[in-house]
Image (cartoon, rainbow, N blue to C red; front, side, top):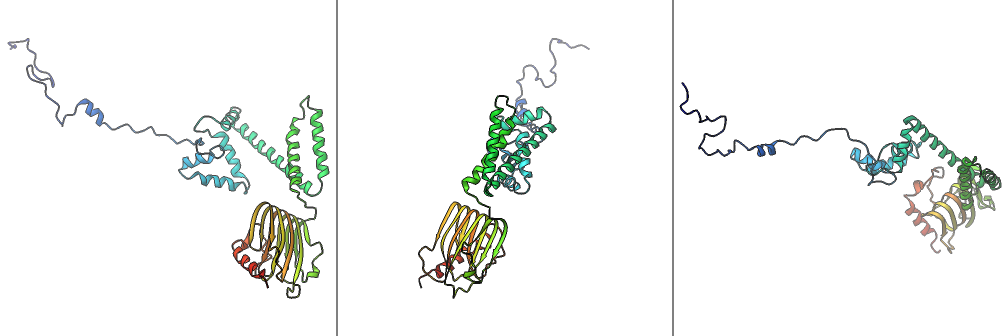
Length: 355
């Protein structure tokens, strides 16, 4: 049986029959745009974080800043670690140099990154070998500078000057050919070390080691006092009968190291002290830096009294007015008396009061 009106199409799918208005989407049937908006955003692409040196948080080349951001900790922790490692074999300094050269920065390439690129272009192991050779060469220059300074402090300034002059003459003779340019860094290192020692007037010709003097009377103290070149000098005057020896004069002279002078708490410390570079702790008064001068209780006539004239080129000078301080505890630095400086100042004030 056929349709009576074949020209009329039947409705297909969800199309409305002819003559009927289109139906609006209900809440249960969202539009295509709404469905698109309701789809969850695709998750971000996952991948390993990459270590980068920081271009904003940097003190040198941003190694500590980059490590702090990578591990989400304060970069100061890494800076302290790198600094302390210098005093414990220097491994941290070597690691810092490698990170500076081979880890790129998060900004525009800097000199360290460009140097690392050049090293990587010649091969990783060859680059590491060149870095190691550079560190060895730098250490050798420091050794030369230290040796020259040590020689000048020992009084061998003229031989050191002859070596510098000879190197300069050799460089002048080979200037045209350029064959002795490698001598420039050693010559500069020797000259710098000698110049620093000469400028600071360091003198260690009096011997090296430890000296411990404990005189029993003022007469036992040498007329020129106590002193030597480099090391630890201890002068303990607490065995003297200060009731009989009312005024004691003492000269102390040390080139490099630590000088400790001990007197009873009842003794007034007067005189003058000089430290070229380092720390001075005299009867509780602490100073540090370069050219540290201290005039102690100037003009006091109190007795018993120590009149001291101390000169130290580089290091630490301690004049300790205490009955209980241990003279054998000679650790370098402020020592156990640093926290008791107020007690030493109080003892000095009582001892130097007018009587």
